[in-house]
Amino acid sequence: MRTAFPRGLAAVVLAAGLTATATPATAAPAATDRHGWALHSAGRLPGSYFSAIASSRPWDAWAAGHQVDGTGRARGVLLHWQGRQWNRVPAAGLPKVSYWHSVATSSPRNVWVYGWSQTRQSMAHFDGRRWREVAMPDDMVTHGFAKLAVAPGATWLASERWAARRVRGGWRSTSFPQGVTVTSIDARSAREVWVAGYRHAPGEPVQPYAARWNGRTFVPVATPDNGLVVRDLYVDRRNNVWLVGQIPQGWEDHRPAVLHWDGRRWRDLGLPDQNQWPEAVSVARDGTVWVTGDPEGFEGPATFWGHDGRRWRTVTAELPRGAFAPRIAGLAPIPGTNRMWAVGGYEVVVGEGSSQSYESFHVYR
Image 1 (cartoon, rainbow, N blue to C red):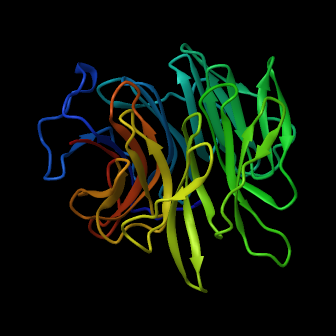
Image 2 (cartoon, one colour):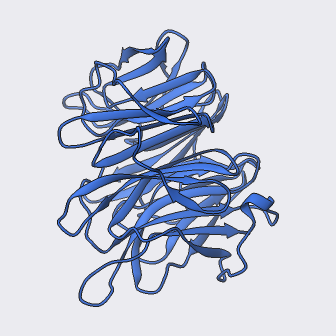
Image 3 (spheres, helix red, strand yellow):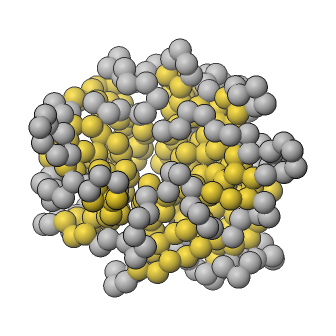
């Protein structure tokens, strides 16, 4: 996770539209480039970056991130999509944080956000009317790296060593085995909850790790011993789970990998472009799997890879003039559609100083 960004970094929200039709609340803008990406402005947020996005309805989505001012000081920023534009969430009821790191939602009346400052971690819940701060689980001592997962009847927060579920207004924690580091969690229901990351024993190479909740604890699911370092996890439905990450190839090279679990075995679909750094995976309603990432910034335009069950295709999105090094940190399907939200950031150069308004994008195929 990045904790500091150059002043020239601007936030980006993209929506990969995988259908030609749009509901009135999310109608496609008139102006699009040759890739079908259209630009929206959501107010000036120079020096900002968004690391997570979640959506429960076509007209309801939340983006979590931060903004760095001219002095290098960061402050957390939440944005709310209500069908036509992104609006900054007022601070009332929210704890003060430097970074909002994770956001999850199962309905417009059940939204959770997690973040941190230099002195403490914080969590808040939105019930459809107001935000209120919620006490952190006692076991969450790993600072800044926890992630949320929310489904009907299930709220989870997972750090590198622990996962905690919400039980009757409190938290009940479960620890992971020695040597396991969890990097992602996802849930589709109270029982369909997965965590993934990697395991490392002294003197042994790093190997991928995945485990499924059985109602009492997380049960490991055997993974290939291929050295994969899992960066993201997506649970589409029972026996349809996706992992993405990198497999080291020697001292400096690596190979991107996309693993699919069908309930019996894992299949590595790879990626059509090598030496990429997949950071996020999600699945649209039509079953298309979307992968993106690159934490160091793509050398060219923002890039997405879609797999329709038979083959990959590469889709790119041009950025505003003067923008470069786009990074995409998170993906989320737009419920009820075949479209996909994506969040991240890019850098810009504007004269002697660097600044850029916050921008969002839609794409329609």
